Image 1 (cartoon, rainbow, N blue to C red):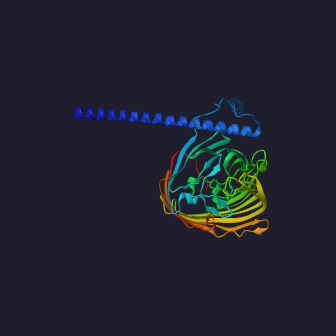
Image 2: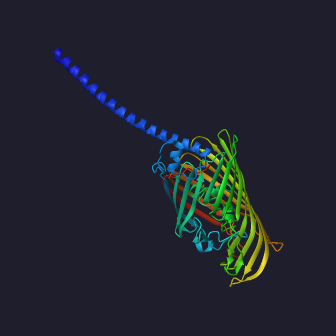
Image 3: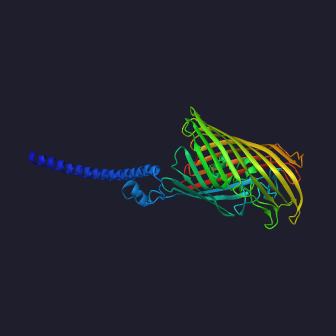
Length: 472
């Protein structure tokens, strides 16, 4: 009996030892695979570092496998698809709108002396396009397809395609440098200007369904979105301090423009040579405890060619224009998901030119010296309760509206304002649902009577895929 018991103990010990040995072998194999992967990553990083130092010392004409081999002393593949697979995302924005004015009524309203047909369709990118949430009932505002990736250690490429019921356009397509020294960065292609604060942010990350009144009236719902070149410099200071400049084509349909107006052979207004828009700005940020303060000053200079030859009262406007911007954002964090954000911008524009009054055959009846000095602002407060819920309120105003024609002030209405309130729920970072109310007292009908417009909007913004982080 004792022999049998002893034999059982020996057999059990050998069996467990065998099991432990197999587990140990399996763990060692897994660790070996991890070590091999880490060694491969270290090798690639070392090769990039060596090549980067070599490139600073010598001028290399092309980024090719031969250059890499000369720089590192060993062969590297010219491109790794696995390392540079593009991020692809799709964002769909829809809304339901209930407005106490019909669609036919709303398209004929204007911000007097500032913008005509602010809710109607307009020409953008060579095709007719409506503003967001333009119609009562259901709206498919857009579908946005974004494709972006690092090209190599030195440049990144971003493209955004904008699909709407009226067509498709390239909203943005630009390259950005990623490895310049001394705090420099350059960008080229079609992109949203860094003028002000809100302009460079896409619609799907706005805090409200619609653009602030002063932005939409001065620059349209697309803002300054141009083809051009940008250079920015971040100063080597303890707090963030950035200076930027942009040279842009100048095709903004609301305030700027450089094309001729009228018949090509005999235009009403001659065009100007592009590029015709120049932007400069300075931005800074600092922290006070759990509070971040971010602000900036911006300036735009450009030519204006505004075509209203198809209107009921046809006319054209040509001018040199300046736009000034002041922006301020203060954000206090209570914890990781709870915050209070105050955001404000002031826009001031100065347009000096001539209005060409036309007849039905697009012939000039008269020419009037025209000067416009118009200022507006928005200010908003957003409270993030937690990771899912946010509430907010916004006030919009155009408080200066001086229009002087042939030396005579037209006494345009300058008490133009709108109130907005919203509540938002996010199921995740990929799905957002927002209920918003607007009371708009900025629009007038063709008889010069102010309209009181109440609007309720329910917005759904859904995203899939990998999308890059947005700027602060």
